[in-house]
Image 1 (cartoon, one colour):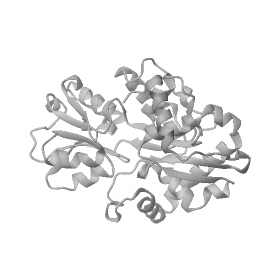
Image 2 (cartoon, rainbow, N blue to C red):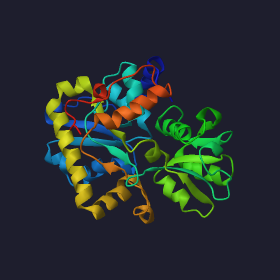
Image 3 (spheres, helix red, strand yellow):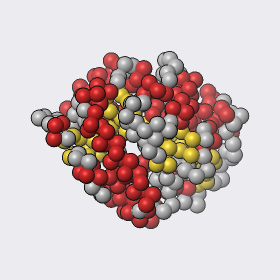
Image 4 (cartoon, rainbow, N blue to C red):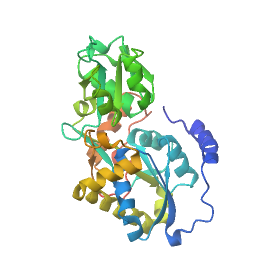
Amino acid sequence: MKINRRSFLTKVTVGIAALPLARGFSWAQSKGKLGYMKIVDNAAMFMAMEKGFFKAEGLELETVPMAGGAVIVQGVTSGDLQFGWTNVISLYQAHVEGFDFKLIAGGATNVRGSNETHAMEVLKDSPIKNAKDLEGKTVAVNTLNNIVHLMAMAWVDKNGGSSAKVKFIELPFPQMEPALLAKKVDAISVQEPFAAAAAAKPEVRILAHPWGDVATKFLIASWFASEKWIQKNRSTAQAFVRAINKGIDAIHADKEGARSAMIKWAGLKPDMAGKIGLPLFDKTVSEKDLQITIDLTRKYKMIPRAIKAREVISNLAPKG
């Protein structure tokens, strides 16, 4: 959904009531809170916790699992959270509404062919064979006016169809496969690990990997903080970035350890750990990898004005 400053601030007031307040935290002691999601995209943080990288950097972090980016953004806005995870579209939408959020570290990147994390899926016997066939059909996305919806529309339009003729509805990822099998929707635009789980069913087939088809490489989501907070706590922010980068190195160096961390922290089923498509875990934040989704977000009117990628990148973030 789109972020409107008035409604957003109202949600912050309500949302933070459900969060344990960080009263009396002393950043001189490098204590703080991090909001994350139980998804494999957060594997660098999982490894940093498992390997003790945050502690090695002098950080004592309380990690708080949250249902989605919206409540994480609320926590960072309120000051209860110092670090959070967000998809890039939500970050752009918040930026144009005047919030000072900045990306501070590399995150999860979708790469065509090698690191595909998303799929458009239909029933095996469905007459839908291409993007144009989706016209007049119902496609499930997890949230309207955000990254899944955006890339689905861009894929349809790029491949000979008209996204304006497709009915997109909101449906949480865990509910997509049952809805498809029950023929309540014609197609699902679904993220891992739900994409692999659904595709394993004999009744389901993959129509496309729309994200990789739309863009060769782009940042899906990453770690962010308030620019005001970053400027007041620069050494703590730098320590966080170093720990995340060590976590990324550990993913590549200890694949079995990374698998175990994903099972433990993300609740990934052991039998799915080796079957799902994983994003590229990159230490850097590339303006190019952001600008492509910024331009698409503007094209599909999910933000009211154009912005430059550098506007949402902290000067602490390693540049790609």
